Length: 503
Image (cartoon, rainbow, N blue to C red; front, side):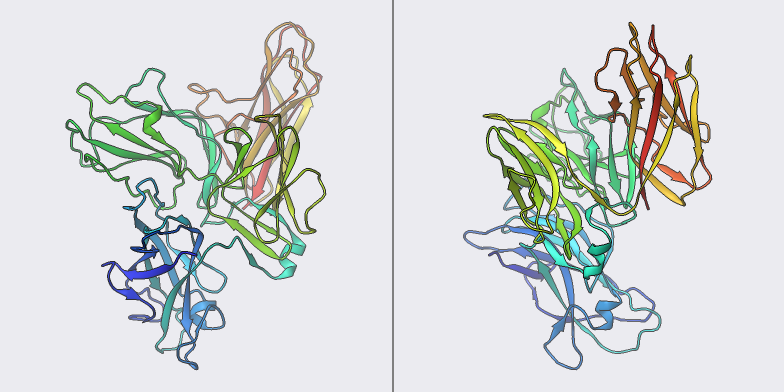
């Protein structure tokens, strides 16, 4: 097992426990910077997996005894942590995103993910006692939980609900949900392209259509690249748009610190060119890209990857802060389960490997490759489906409308369905939805993501379009229209369902 040690920011002074400095009821203390090292200086350093950072407080009645709960600083979440940087000299391919401040204490920690051996995460710690806190001295000790993937919760929690946690309403959550692939231009130039997609940021769902981002020959300073120099740029997803963060140029440049809380799409290496930047696929690094909700993707051959995610079930809160790779049997159908321990198990039948296992995915393989992936995830939390349906208008026009009666909803998926293809000879049935008279597809002129089903389609459901409007509030009017009818025959009925998560 690797060893995790906490140092002051000089990377020399080892910290075991310290007095909490300058405590004042109702006020934040000045932050302390700590560096969390894994196997620092070891001859054969090992990585620490699925790291979660915590704070313990000394029991004033028993010197030397540090508790994670049962004391005011722990139970009232006086401590706050955030990630502000990292040291990756031993593994330059690794990075960790910066975060916003998060409360830590009893049952609450700061998620980090995997840390390679002989690398460090830089964090700041501060405290804020409530205004009613009694004046007294306290000592703290930082700690870490790692190589674990579940934590007990009161049984009633998972009796009431179980499944994948969507992250909606949880301001500490961020991750990619769908799409957002980063690619170069076909003929390499100074742009990278981000596909349409959705993501989670500070507990809210956001979406965007395809976008292009220019990366010129100037670094963050801005200073122009010279021969032999390059810089890294980071593409992240923030509050409704993609953020580009440039680093500093060098012969061997460091990757920039990411904007706090924004999930990474890709790092892009921009090298010197006498005329203009030329970016190709080899310059785009997506190894640290963070999807959420245990997304399953095929890697190569019989391997699949399950992304980061959180879930509830069987008396445990289950969490993964990074991806997991599984190898499946050839020429079979595999079922991917999560156990009460948070670990994954693969079976060849739908019989649960244990009574509290959660089924996430059904994956089919042939002799050499993954051929089909079927989503079997169920979600914890409240889901509301807003359904608008009716007979297909003889010419494009209004189908149905409804008024939102929930305080706040986030649209997670848009499902467009026709009862039949209409049996026509050309064209398609296309739909669009509006909120208070404004289209949900605000960039349709540049990237039309409105759902459409061809006149001769055999699959009568469309789920892949990206509507940029994702937030619905009480009193808003949602309207569903058809905007195109096929030639020679219309479907009898059309239907639009907005699958929403309650914040």
